[in-house]
Image (tube, rainbow, N blue to C red; front, side, top):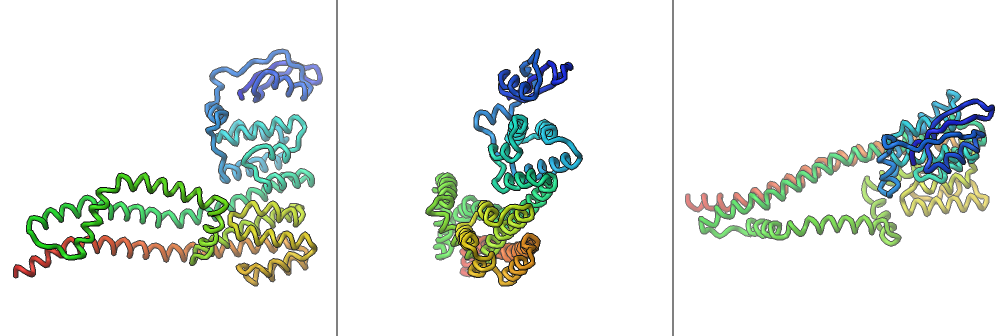
Amino acid sequence: MGTWRWEGLDKNGKKARGEIQAQNEKEVRKFLRAEGIRAKRVTPPSFTDFDFGEWLLSRGYGTSFSNQELCQFTKQFATMLAAGIPIMQGLEILSKAEKNAVLKKGLKNIAQDVGEGKTLAEAMMKQRGFSPMYCNLIKAGEAGGVLDTILNKLAIHLTKQEQIKNKIKSAMTYPTIAVAVGTLVVWGLMVFVVPKFMEMLSDTGQEPPFVTLMVVNISKFLQAWTPLMIPAGIVGLVVFNAWKKSPIGKPIYDKVTMNLPVMGGIIIKGNLSSFTRTLSTMLSSGVALIDALEICLETIDQTYLVKDIRGIKKAVTEGQTFTGPLEKVPYIPMMVIQMVKVGEQTGRLDEMLERIADVFEEEVNRLIETLTKMIEPLILVVLGGIVAAILVAMYLPIFMAAGGDS
């Protein structure tokens, strides 16, 4: 796809010219006819218009855009619509300014589909990266004539989701770096330092104690097998990631992680926060509860939570209240259930769900702080203990020899 230039006559017979993104001349003329423009001259894209990102994308090398990039687009699009800029014009402006190749191409395709008569929601459903929740809210906004308001809600929702993810990532960054550096230090001691000590001990002819022999044997093992352990570790990680995403491995992995101390609470409450905020956003936008529950299932990446929420959706479909089946889920606090009950009774379920999402987010933040406080000293103690044990094992024969000489 490139930028084609055209000259012709508009609906009123006046001279007009412009640019359009298209794959070929036929596509350009088809689009112009749909706009009531009679093209007299169509100029193909020049070499300087070549988009390397799009070329990579067309070869299947592009990656999808992030939540943050989608959030940025949503905010900008909402601002443009609120200022009275037409949808087509807004999409064209944003597509030209967008740097991510996948989102850029998606916006161009959306603008083209909208120009051919499709609704914005229909056009977005055809592009990857726009979730069913996103598209359904856009559909509700178009139907109610409040598209800019819906886009602002979506931007807030995406921002909240991104904040939770970033907090979890930032909390795990220090422990990950500490473990990696500590492991490298221990490996360096075992592979380079311990053999030097053994050379010194062999010159004395002294029989080393059991602890020293054990460290020496581990050192010899690492020296011999490290070249194979690194690729084996990489293969192991790849296999493990594939297993935990498989239909057999995912339920087992999810069951184990949700029962871990502290980390299990972060996983459960993080997912529940995302679920309740998404449900609140959809209900406040006019989406029916049953439809909203079905769409919200896609925001959860935990097998057992999905199973429980499917059970809630089934019960609601059969005519029960939202509160009834919610009470049967063991990990949902009673306070949350009471808030949902009040929301149902007062007809303000969307507001209550938003408050519940805030409560879960606060709980996640508290648990992250607790986890960080637990992990940091644990890492220091374990790594420090290993390094101390290695040094003691190496110096012990020297101390024993000095004691014997005296």
